[in-house]
Image (cartoon, rainbow, N blue to C red; front, side, top):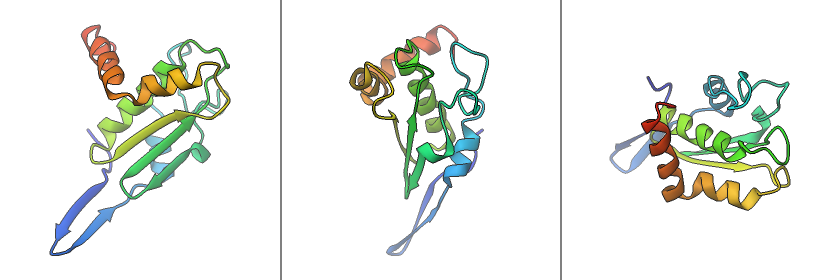
Amino acid sequence: MPRRKLLRHFTDQFSMIAMVTASEVFEALKPVMDPEHPVSITDPRLGIVTPEGIKVDDDLIQVRFKPTVATCPMGGLIGVLIRYHLEKEYPDAKIVVKLIPGTHVSEDAVNNMINNNDQYNNIIEQMQQRGMI
């Protein structure tokens, strides 16, 4: 069940937006586990997602994350899981997930895997077919 969503209600010419905070987004990410370790991506020991890496601006939620190592083979999957989880939690928001610059050797490819809708949807479909999500 979604937590607090970004909602847009139109009344006459005014719109009112119930804003979510960066700290609420951070809390919403706690159930997302690192694919290689049975630990939340928000766990400070891993430092994958930190509160400082989350920005909320109107209906845009941006998350910058750092894989555990610069050659992390699961870097793209971590980003896909972040985006997937936040899209479920905040279906009215635009979600943008990217690596912190300089934290992965294949930064452009990983960011494209997460944010190219065709690639992302293909990965999500495969994960659903395998019962992974």
